[in-house]
Every structure is written in C-alpha cells, then in structure tokens.
Length: 230
Image 1: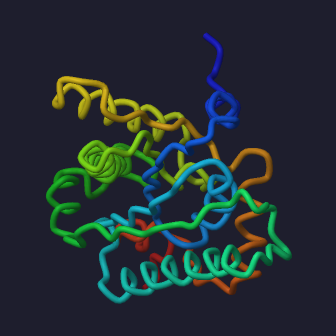
Image 2: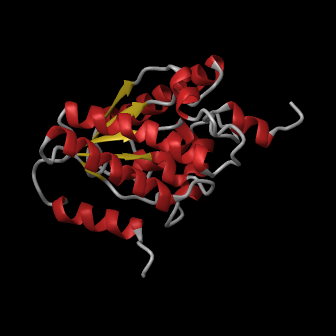
C-alpha cells in the first residue's frame, strides 16, 4: 500500500478552487505562534482563515498565556502587512487575506480527564493521539457549527508529530461530526506542513518576528520528558 503524500493532497485541493472567485473558509487549529507562522504565510493566499487556539493540554496557566498572546501578536503583524501592502521578507502576495482568531476554552482538566490511565505513555504514543482527538474533535465541532468548509491543524509542521496519525484523527473527527449532523458539513484539510522545507521556514519566521518558542508541546508530561531534571 502506497504511503499517502498529504502535502501533495493539500496542493491538489487548493488547485481545485484556486481560480474561484470566493475563497473557502478555513478553521485552523493552532498550537503556538512558531508552528503557525509558516502555515499562515502559506494558507492565507488561498483561504479566509480563522485561527482556533484550543489547547487544554497546556498544563501551566502562565505558559498558556504566553502562547496565546504570541499567537495574537503574530496574527496582528501579518494583518498589518496587508494594511500596509508591505510583504518584505515574506513569501506572500496581494492575494493574502486577513486572519481572524478564536480562542477556545482553556480547561486543562479536560485534557487530564481524557488521558487518565495513559500518564506513563511515552511522548508520541497513545496519550498524544488522545490529545489530538480532543483538540481536533473540538475544532471539527466549531467548524461545523460556524459553517467553515474546512478545518485542519498546524501540528503537522512539527518533526516530532506523526502526520499520518494527525491526518487520520482529523478525518475521523470530520466523519464523526458529519454523522452527528446527518449531512456533510465540514471537510478535514490534509496536510504535512513540515514538507517542502515548511519546518525550516517556520524557524526563519520565528526569528524574523522574534517569536517565543518552547521545546515541548505544552503538557506537563512532555515537559518532564524533555526536562527530567526540573
């Protein structure tokens, strides 16, 4: 069985509506500003984007606040480029659209309840999949309720995240919400944003905008695995 190329699937999807007058609406789940940087630079050329910042997996309130404020700062900077018409240093054109942001509920207990019994799983294992299901399930729900045509996540830009698992979880979330609605309300947009030097570009953009970066996903389990001495 051939391995799916999610990056090419995304390109083909974009090609299918690139010349249409009306841009599709996309709800983009975002984990942090650094991971969003390239995804937004790329996708804002083709979609009307609302960033959905929903990350109850971030254990510490201070860490959550840092990340959500950096997300807002990045979006404001991108939107100011459109206002000024100045895209210097960016792979963007005058087709780029403004970006909205929607902040989801921040309730870490939902994450801890979801992963109960999986506390000792290694990073990248079953606990992470449950976390993806929690975040993408809520993204699918909001996308369907608010009439977005597509939803996806910035998480596939990370070399530490399994794009096969993330795309599978996203597609299952779309199928479930469509089943619950009794009609096809929303589509999951396939992606592997790390491909074609997407991750490298996110590093460049993080430096350009002086974005706050961390080396763990946000949950206490990940932080402990990365920094066992703390």
